[in-house]
Length: 273
Image (cartoon, rainbow, N blue to C red; front, side):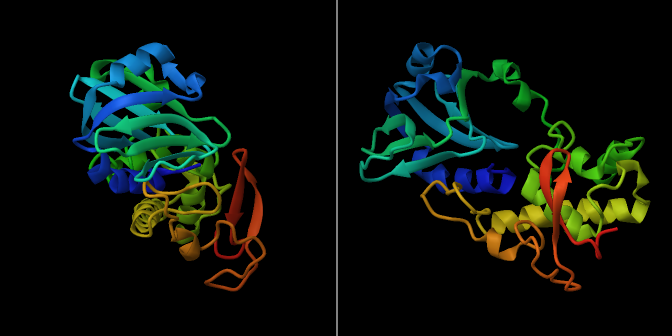
């Protein structure tokens, strides 16, 4: 699933290509991906509107339109959003927005799990996952104090807490594993067992791995591509994720893989305590 660095990279690579452009037509190749309002109403709301601003919140992309409507795209597992300068067929294209500069903004999705919405900004509460998002890494709201408070009294595993989008918005499996590895914390530790210095180290690690992910344009293992169709390169800079049985970059111990909080989890059994 694209996580915060990937979605932020998509936003940055799309921004100058779609901001100021008018949506002339909307091709609904798979209408069921539109979750609010009806597909026909969605089509009517976004057609003949100008994209004035492209924003991101967690793993959601928000297209602000000059009509006062916000079009929201959640890529989920395999969604891709990109601009085509030449009109070529993509067999996974699901929704196609024809723009006034003869280009197309294409939403493609092999597993068809993504979702699209259109509504006034005041009604974004209708999208439960967006409305309840916690503060994001690198944001002013994500402070050391906030993080320590969220750890307090939590008996569950630290990895499960970090994956909770209501606690930290945009942080997903890859970057949770990387954060825990950088901080030297085992993913099965109880959240409230972290000492103050460990909490501070983990807080810093979260911001560091997110910043690195954005710097390298996201992590591309399978489906993820940016808004220009390019691959990210952060996969070449990972410490543990996707490196099962390979030597730890610090101590040489083979990286282990197990399941924590229902997710495949990579960690160093020697460095992470």
